[in-house]
Image (tube, rainbow, N blue to C red):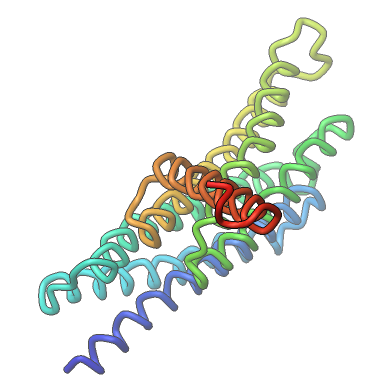
Amino acid sequence: MRTVYQEQMRTFAHDLSLMSDRVRTMMSEACLALFDADIEKAETVLSSIDGVEELRKKAEQTSFELLALEGPVARDLRQVVSGTYIVEDLARMAALAVHVARTARRHHPDHTLPEQIEPYFREMARLTDEIGAKLHDVLVTYDPEKAMELALDDDAVDDLHEHMFQLTTKREWPFPVSVAVDVTLLSRFFERYSDHAVNIGTRVVYLATGKQPEEYETARRTEEQQETMREQFDEIRRRYGSDAF
């Protein structure tokens, strides 16, 4: 029975990483649809949502079965509970990729973004793809340090989102209101996508350490300070002998 339980836990973890890969691919193809006015890429993204939904349902069913039948404790319990929230964040990220693809499809065969604005979104696309790659690693390794890095990546996306808002609200905005609406919404889609990745990172930190990111960071810094002090004391002992204290 324990072997079956452990296999279920491994399958659950694998489904989360697989779902994150699907979501990353969807956003990557949605960005290609946006920048290249590629209707086929847009349609591919729209048709991919069904596969993600199947993974979501499978992961949710597995988590419910583990909670109801196996009674996991400690880290295993954290993994299952955190996993149920991670599934929802990934599903929302997939939905945001669909929003980007639908925007591109609606404007086809024209490009959605003005030439002067597109570079900002290409940078957001690059950042979110890096976030997607890092998210996969986080869900495979449960490394709290790497999970914490997602918040820093999100800050860069937030800065670009704020810049887009400032541009579209200036009197000097040279494009129609409809373009301002598209730019604002698309920027929001990217910003929310990275926010959900941060949510997942937060849950992985808790899963791996039992602490919230702020608590984990405080504990880590305290440990580093204590280690530095130990090294300094060891150096003093080495130089002056144990009688130095």
